[in-house]
Image (cartoon, rainbow, N blue to C red; front, side):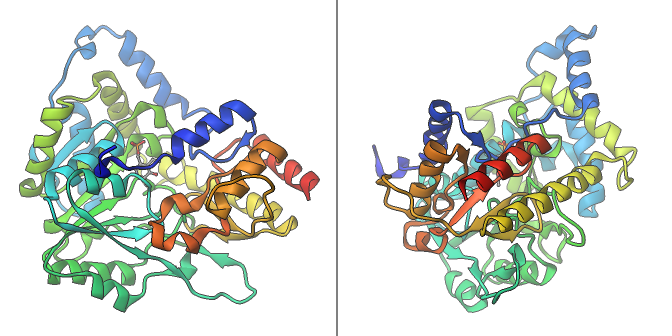
Amino acid sequence: LPKRLEGAKRVVEYIQLALEHKPLNLGQGFPDFPPPKYVTDALSQVANGDNFMIHQYTRGFGHPRIVAALSKLYSKLLGREIKGQTEILTTLGAYEALFSTITGHVDVGDEVIIIEPFFDCYEPMVKYAGGVPRFIPLRMKSGGSKVCTSADWVLDKDELENLFNAKTKAIILNTPNNPLGKVFTEKELNQIADLCKKWNVLCISDEVYEWIVYEPNRHIRIATLPGMWERTITIGSAGKTFSVTGWKLGWAIGPENLMVNLQMIHQNSVYTGVTPIQEAVAIAFETELQRLGQDECYFVSISRELLSKRDYMAKFLQDVGMKPIIPEGRLLYDSRLVSSGSEKDKYKDYRFTKWMTKNVGLQGIPPTAFYSTPNKHLAENLVRYCFIKKDENLQGAAEILRKWK
Ligand code: PMP
């Protein structure tokens, strides 16, 4: 394998493990309950409606109806008029948005700052482009005996400042963060923004979990900070927004001069997205646009529903002696592993999660997968459990852990 192709093996390995041992799977971060009915109804209407042209290729940079909906929504969210024709690209999931952004902007030898823990494709994508990943971990402030939250994980200001230099091309920000659930505060985002402006650096802002934020935390879009629109590509995902991860529709939004680079990569690798999916998601957005901010808006209700799941899981993990790191957004991460028998993997969290899958019947994800090699030790004592699952499955997980204990 060429060096630049060494990448994340974790996902494939753990899917295989789940297939073999059939554990209760709290590993993969997708919902195990149905998406909102009006969203799936939209797809079936689109598929079976009179407009049969909806099954053919559409505009390459984005199907017009979804582009119009995204432009309306993000004009509100970003506080400026977003021009659908030039400032939005729809992609095959947020994955392709990340890929087109990184490949379209990073040149051989360019440095890209990646905040750890990070969604595991960032590193290989930077390497494919010939770039050099430079890592900086969020470090846990010692919280004493109190319950730890993802807000206790912070960047060291000097460490961050020291990473920026003339070779820095971009920084990849992920807020709310996967896997930690950290929601960056305005102060933290301003620190990053100031350095981006000082060193003329692009900010690639992966905001796929923008709607999964628990009160009183607030998701702040870095593109809305002074001087940042000009240097930010904001990335989103219909899969995360509407709990339809299998639909693989994402988008990137930014100023025209930056979007041109993404469009080139997209045009010559993918060319066009899936027409009926884009049409159905457009209909879903049109519905939400009419009730934005209201209680029945899915973007509001999803986090409310997840909040009780989060608190339920935090409680049962504490009951069995684990120490959860309570997320401000999205999933849960929690610490304290036990000896993990016969597994041979180098890192403790891998040994633990494999052993648990095979012997206890509960699957989690090893968080060292979200770290560069020198920093893996920072997460070796942790495991990631996902709680965007049916209540009965969370109760099942609680039961399994209680029995195991
Ligand atoms: N970014 C992050 C942080 C993610 O967690 C994911 C999916 N797990 C993606 C991007 C990719 O999203 P999509 O499924 O829309 O490609």
